[in-house]
Length: 336
Image (cartoon, rainbow, N blue to C red; front, side):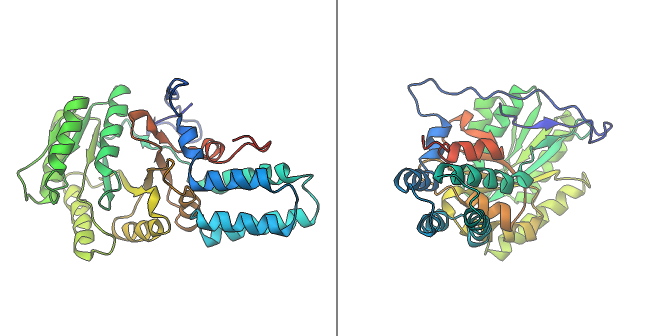
């Protein structure tokens, strides 16, 4: 079961707060690859599966090959060293009966590493609108992610509005309007070349006047090295603050899972510029290396709210550490 988000009444203490029932994400029928199939076909999934089936002995060569697999799949030096040091110590202490036992422990290690960043997006009932500011570089899947989020929230009965704040890319406004039409969600936009902060300010004012539950604001894709555009994001936040001192309530960075270790640089720079509260890692299907999630967990520490494992609406999934590792790696018995 997957929960796209949970709603949190401010008046209920955090320790006892009720959450909305889990939103079940239906799986495709048996004729189509599931999200697990696509995730397992990532580089990390394929390499670890091959290693498990081809290396029957517990020895240093096994750990060396595993280290190479983790590094080549963008798990990152810090996370890889942590995982391998623990495995090596336990193997030397003869804690593993066989190779499947070692890999079963590796899976548990990986889940534990990801647990701290497994935090669902919360929509508070006492904040209207709850503002999500979505940022990222060009091509990461920002606008598509916004469309999928709007669809899920509509299905949960929330009144959603969109702000077409990507005023630099010619087709961006039309793309967002297409998603709005598809989901029957209003889109606030201005003519080409408008100031992004102005568009989002107007959208927030409109969302307030209409009593919308959620406002999702798109922004122009920008490289994390473009200081001027990064400064503009800070301006967007300042302008929103004139209408709502607490907005945005969530700042999501959308990261392409194919960017590997460059994702770390993106996350650091965007976090420094606007203060990220969550990540969406997209394109974690058969073309991705898959390991960047572990590097983000160990070196950035910002919660991963969602992962994208395909093009379909149902392929945007709440990040769940155990489900992710189960999908990524083969079962301890060696079955992929």
